[in-house]
Image (cartoon, rainbow, N blue to C red; front, side, top):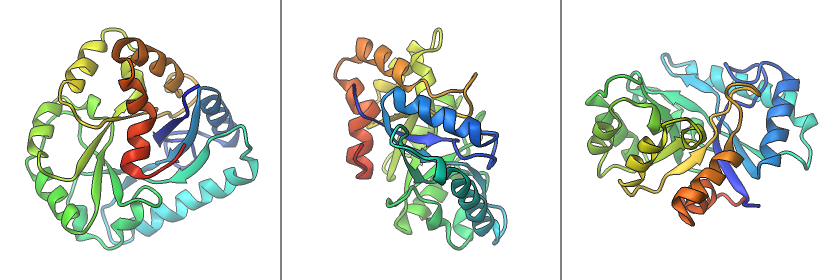
Length: 233
């Protein structure tokens, strides 16, 4: 079984719209491990709108991990911490945003408004790059103007994450194929929120990707994440 890295999940109990409580968090992580995930990044939603936003978020995230930590076992993935930061304003204006990076990396995961690309995003990302921060675009497959975003971000230090569900959804194959044609070093992650309609799906998605893309599936689900972020499964 391929040892997978999941760099986008909402598995901490009671922190955001992900796992509602400890039991659901444990169930999500146990299921994830059974599917082959060996490292799982806990990336709760984060909005930075005021100077205190970063501290407030980190305190809430720490409380969620504190609840979960005593219940982690060898039959669950290793947890690393991060954030899914909503870019609806220039976060360069706030102190401490580097603390929102994926643990032990200089990558910050950014989520964008879904419907229309904003030309200011590239400017904000450029300033992040100047600060030494690199960007991982969360679920690029969800944005209506993803092609424009990729064009705008060309030349910037940006990588892209694709949701595993795109490999399993009906008629989603065309979008995945179109994304793959751009030749970026994508990472596939679960973006799991619960055990029902937004569960892990990494195992099933990998099987589909293996049939469609062959050995490239190993890059998408494990090797790219390991290579880009220096994280070993």
